[in-house]
Amino acid sequence: MFVLGNLITALATILDYLLTIANWLIIIRALLSWVNPDPYNVIVQFLYKVTEPLLAPFRRLVPAYSIGIDLSPIFALLAIWFLKLFLIRTLFGIAMRL
Image (cartoon, rainbow, N blue to C red):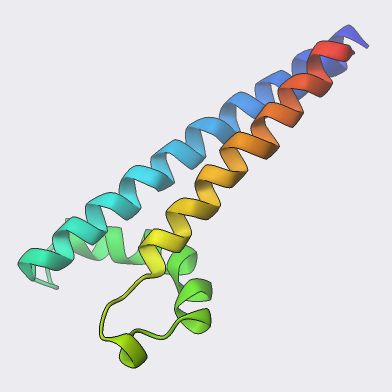
């Protein structure tokens, strides 16, 4: 049981790091949208390729053309925040009990 608890703790920690990185990438992409960056820049292309799969489901729920503002980064950040509060804490709680 000790090994399983350590495995769950390690998975929760890695998932927490990945969610934090996704959080920052979405924030950076939202800030870049204010300045209209060069779409041929390698960094901008990387940000779009990494964050688009995270933002696309929220764009289908709330299309930007109906209100004129893309709210998908806000909803994606809220979903990441929920996962960090609920899923990560639950995994750490399970690991502590093992």
